[in-house]
Image 1 (cartoon, rainbow, N blue to C red):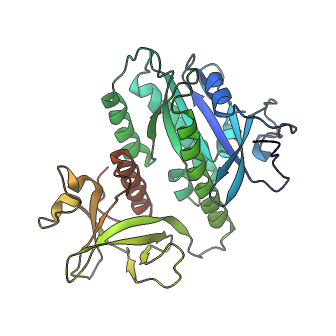
Image 2: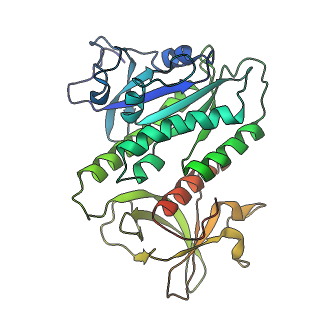
Image 3: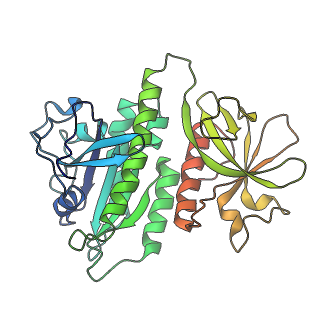
Amino acid sequence: EGGHFPSMATPALNLVIIGEPLSGRTELANALGQREFGFRPPQPPAEAATAAPLEPVTRLVGGPGGDFKVQIWDTSQKGRLDSTSEAFVKSAHGILITFDTARPPEPASLLRWVRTVQEPLQRKYEKTPALVQALPMYLVANKSDQPRAWEPAFCDGVIEDIAGKFRMRLDLRSVSPQSRDGIDDLLAEAVDRMAAYRVQQQAVLAAPPGQAVVLESGWMIKRGAIFKNWKRRFFRLSSDRTLAYYDTAEGLSALKSISLENAKYLDGGSCPDCTWPPGPGNASHRFGLHPAGSSRVFYIVCFDESLDVRMNDAKMVRWVSALRSAGVRNIPS
C-alpha cells in the first residue's frame, strides 16, 4: 500500500469473528488483516465502551465509493459470547462464524451461535427488524488446507434452518489462513456487503418516522407482460412495501412500481412457460409476485452474470428475506 494511510474521514467497518473453540479465530483475524497500517489502533465501538479493552486487527481496503478501515474483532471467549462482547455484535457491520474443517460442530451449536447474534440485534433494532435480517453473516469453514471432516450438505441444512427459523442469511465460505486460500476473496466480498449494509443502516436510522427507505436493491431479470421476453432491470424494495424497477442503477423515475400490500409470493416452478434461465433447475432462482387485485404475475430471476450458481443462490436468499420482511405472503420457510 506504499505509505497509504487512512485519513480521519475514512469510514470504519466492524467485522466481528465468533465461533467454535479451537477454530482458528485469531489466525483468521490476522490473515484477514495482514496488511496493517502505522496508526494508533481504534478504540472499541461506542456501544462497547464498558467492555474489556480489545484491539482489532485493522486493514485499509478499497470498496464501493472509496476506502474503508476494516476493524476485525475476535470477541469470542470460552466458546461463547459473554455480556461484554455482545456490545461488539451490536456494533457489527458483518459477522463471521467459524469452525475447524477437521472438527465440524453439531448443527445445534451453529444455531446457538446465530441466536447469540440475533438476540442482541433484535433488542437494538426492535423498531427496524430489517436491519437484523440484512446483516452480512458468513459461516467460515476454517483451515481448509487440512483434511476435511465435513460435507457441504451438512452446512446446506444448517443454512436452510437459519433462513427458516431466524429469517437471516448465512453464506458458506472455506478459507485457509496458512495458505491464504480464499482469504482475500472473503474480505473483498464482505467489505462490499458491509459497506452496503452501513448505507442501509444509516438511511433507516436517520429516516423520520414514516418515511420509506430502501431495504434491498440490485440487478435482476424480469419477464415482460406482453411479449414475454426477459429484460435486465435494477430493482429497489422500499419499506413502504413497494418494489420498483429502473433502466439504470442511478434511475430516479421508475419504469414501474409494484405494490406489495397483500401481494402473494409464487414459486418459480409455478410458471410452466418460463424457460429462462436455461438448464436443469432453472426455476430455483426464479420467483413470482402476484399483487393484490391484479391479474398479472411478475416473474423475476435472481441471475448473476458471472454464471456463478452460488452467487445466484445468495442473491435469491437475500431477496426472499427482504420480501418476507416487507410482508409478502406465502413465502415458504
